[in-house]
Length: 342
Ligand code: TRP
Image (cartoon, rainbow, N blue to C red; front, top):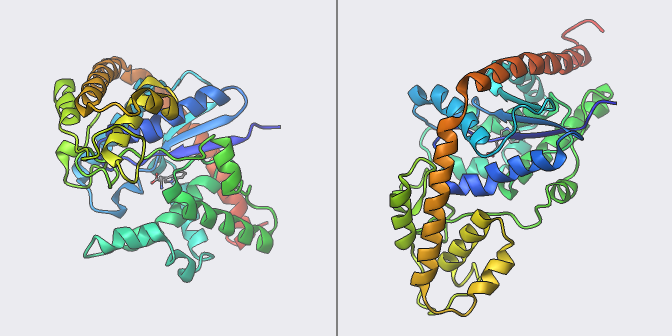
């Protein structure tokens, strides 16, 4: 029997920051390490998703490759023969299947997507692409028969839509799709009962984000390490006067504890216990600033050593292999809906 597929995609519409790194990239790399040999791992860059909201198009192509390099620098083993990396737009079946699924997805269900509403609220001209985002995501998953899709909580609804669509199509046409596992099972699989959300250093009630115009609250992976350390020193804290892990009452301090724990790959509880009750926020900041500085130095050095030629060779060969898989699924669907002879 062929191996079960774990599939993950990380958007490339802006530069990555340490929130992306600690909350998404590292867990993905860990997942590959944990499951190497037993599962097939698909790691792709959803470049077609990148401009569902406005971006600088002139930077997209390079950014996509840069993000793949970042995965490798973070430890993704591209010599593993069960791991496939690819760019969504290099596999036309994604777009093709999206159209077919569109005709079975209901306007009402797509209109209930919270992420759509949140993003639409922030824009003047809302594209149909943004509305269609979750259906393209369903195509990304269903083309490869992926059972396991590790995702953050904000993507739960999209995952449920994917399951609903696959079940609906299977009921109507027979077993055309592998149905991804339920959300509960996904969380267990990814060992992610409490999601990691790194917050802005300046507005710790919000998550760290490149899109908030908040440069001093966000540490980019490309930041000069010493400058990043200064951002930590300038992090917003509170007036409680003692360190406690409490994201409600002390979000700034708790965020620093979280960053510290993740950078040391230690459980958050353990790190929080070490600092609990101490009164010098300055000591905590100095400690985390040093950790961030060291991390960025090491990371940027690994990034500069990534062999681009090897990466491109792997990418091109994986895209060929994945086109084959995706086209096979697409053909089954085309047959099912009557676009191709049975
Ligand atoms: N929506 C995902 C995110 O914002 C990115 C994504 C697109 C994705 N297609 C996917 C993730 C398919 C997993 C599977 O993070």
